[in-house]
Amino acid sequence: MRTVTFKSVLEGVAKLKGVDPATMNATDKLVWTEFINQRVAEGWEHEFWPEATVLEQRLFRDTYSAENTYAAPTAAGASEVYFPATDQYFQALQATTGNDPAVLVAGLYQVDYAHWALSMDSYSGAPWAANTQYVGGVVGTPGTIVQNPADGRFYMCLSTHLSGPAFDPTKFAILTPFERYISLDQTGQTPIGTVHQLTRTNPRTNPRFPGPLTFLVNNKGILPAPLCGTKVWVEFRLRCPVFDSTVWSSTEANTPGQIRYRPDTTGECYLALLAGTNLVPESSPAYWQKIDMPAVLERFIKRAAYADSLREDGQTDKAMAEEQNAYAQLYRASDVALASQGQYERAAAQVY
Image 1 (cartoon, rainbow, N blue to C red):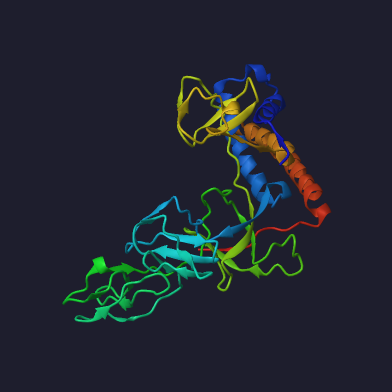
Image 2: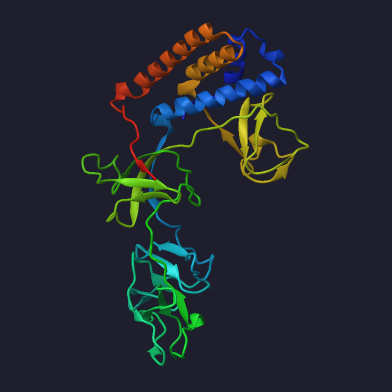
């Protein structure tokens, strides 16, 4: 993405106000930064700007790692993973570390049913009964699946046993129906802003038949249409940047999520990723992430924030004129970035 510094935008608003940037006081910076943030958000959401739109292939769960410890399932949910070797999703039947969901047996992958079960949309099994022989799962052979009459949910047998007079939850693992959704925040992945489209294949390498998918967005994330496969391609807008005029201090104990400004060095704002003290943002990338100000919106943001400041001063007529000027800059940027490239389109998604 082409960027400009936060400092250049903030000082641009000051100059439009007739204020020497060197004499800006803390209150002016605070107020004008708020106006800038509001206008950045407005411009950001106006279009799917090519420089701020990303296409990535996504999974519905994190990829399995032999180094991770996966918790036993509970009524609230299960530890679910994607296993690349078989291109399948699995849920842990008990707490496990280093036990792969499937293992090679005579050249073929077999599910380790002692520790894992295949994730499925639904399960079925006979109602649990007393004085019945149940079989625990082993590699290649699943344990007996039963329906617990107490809660109506399905369980897989962990250890072979003859059932007693009551259901013994220590000998069974609850099975959680698999929900296909893409979290908006996935480990090691770009945070997802507004979704543009979902497809079965890469629309850039297969533009004629990408296999578009309808989708919903809810509190869990993006829910694609059924029969979408194990992976989907998501084209989405990056999350809107937010800025702060609070200057970084070497004596401040920073916490994750804080935003600090470096006016005397880079002129940029930085987002704290980890807690720390006296870690210079521009030279500590593990602790700080630079917040990019989109160059495509620079003129609109300056003019629109200036209009907001005029309105705050009671100069309504002048504010309206400046706001019209600002929108003219926004539409011009849209024409240059989108319409001239035949990319003019907006998002469409159902939300509930």
